[in-house]
Image (cartoon, rainbow, N blue to C red; front, side):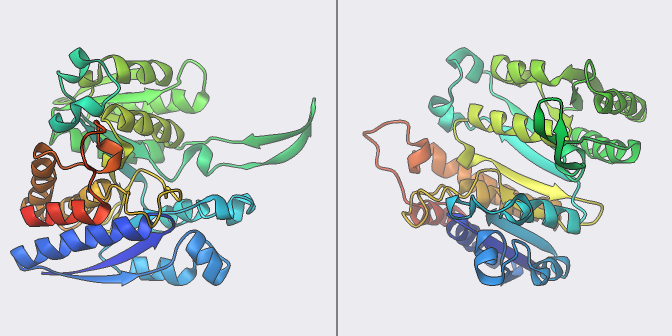
Length: 357
């Protein structure tokens, strides 16, 4: 089989970690007889420097013409003074919208070998957890009306959140469909005691839950969820929530696993075209030093094989290779855990994983 993959390396450590994922995909393709055709496109700060735009039209067209997209990271202090609509991060919202990617899947699981890196107590960690956070990606406050105006106390800024029944239904169905392949439990997160959008969210989710009688459904307020994730993460299977709440909760979930450098993500829509990326940022302070952890991007590539290409066996092989090297004690600096251990560089960790493929 032949697959066309658009590479959006971006800024900071983005090029390094995307190159690592490409190495693993090439090794996997060679083993299973697949050919991956990689085409790089500019995005983020690098695109601003070259074209003046964070998301060039050529990049959008190239991604739409591909079978899937692999993204590194964007942003950095170099572009912090850019206006909001010209910042590198604007490209992320733009490319998700252009590709029709409304569902962001962020798995957060406890790797047994990394229990010592988690900030949670041993009795909580020992129970383990495997959570899939399904975040709405193209609506809500990140895409709502915004601006400045004169208010009671002078100049004020505003951001508006709005959700339609259709937007809630399609992200809800994505969550229920995923739950049907897991432990069949869905927890919907909102702030229905305060927000009108959350009240519509809850009403719509309740109606949708009736179509999935095999799934155990429950609601939870977002502030309680933030507490429960550190108190008893094992209680969750699939979490579904809005754009902003999902952004915050998935970052919290990443930290209880031990390192944000371990967490992959998939952004999906109604077609097989998806975009896959680590949930961490561009880490400009370590760019070019070899200290980046490539595992989140490698696991994102595994998610690509599973969700866009239907190659579950190949995805399993990559995930098992990651588990294997971690169980052998291989660590990058962010998951080192002990000063007496010698951390592997980004390239060294990549080769250790490639050897297991």
